Length: 394
Ligand code: PLP
Image (spheres, rainbow, N blue to C red):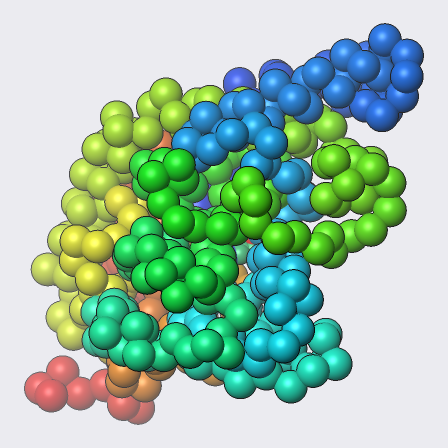
């Protein structure tokens, strides 16, 4: 592969490039404004003000109040903080509701609650249908007086499928149950107005919306009982100890401003590119199929299965042309297990193994889409020739 300029980057659900405006906003806080925001002097105070400005920008994008924004180190930390806080708040409750398609940040925590809490939990993992959607009646039926928290992602990282979290939160609230949503993939791509919802906790991550890696947010609705995950200093009003990652927080604030200002326009552009890519692949490559609901989906994500070939082999061939995408989620690549998301949707093994996630951003161009459309049919045809399972007459 050549220099990074030759990369065709279609792996934006794994991470995104930092927007130039974001980097520009960050630079002073990596160079001359290095004070500690907690210091008494004016030099540090100015840094504290920059954090508060970023807090306001994040709040504006989410339709929240600035006091409801807690800066963290990543989406994973926000997820753990929300769920473990709810469980500690209600030690007498022993039930958690989530889905079978959560990101490992929620899935692995829910699989190991006993290790982290020392208590036994019963976890309901809601099934999804072939489109990756949830049955709301089954969800309602799953809630009990023992349920301490519901944690359901806003949008799926592998398929882009969007869950009706606003309605699900309202249903939880009627039962007096706390509701958390992992909105790491949704923020910046889906309009969000938390004031109008019953969501208690929301997680987001900077590096999915053109801010740097290593910064996240936990939205914490005013009045929601809360027990911090990281104890220490009084930072974030005692809700998250640790000296703030100032430059990244400032960058995240800028990224939220940009996302809020351009969301509709960018979504329209990105959706058109995604649709061209998806339709082109599905029509030019036999035995290919889309995974995930056609409409209830992020505008940037296309998850396509090419039957009878291995996703990893496809990625290696794409890599030779500098095309970056993912098979399953980035966090599970390296293992040959088909994705738990596609398995939950009932995608047959022969298709789940050959699934590729293309996730676009506003930095992609039509020329890039055309290039990928030009290369993919030959890659798949070549791999199928080598596949013992492939029979073109099937
Ligand atoms: N949740 C979802 C849905 C994600 O896609 C990711 C990252 O891929 C995470 C959580 C984890 O975020 P972070 O990398 O900031 O810990």
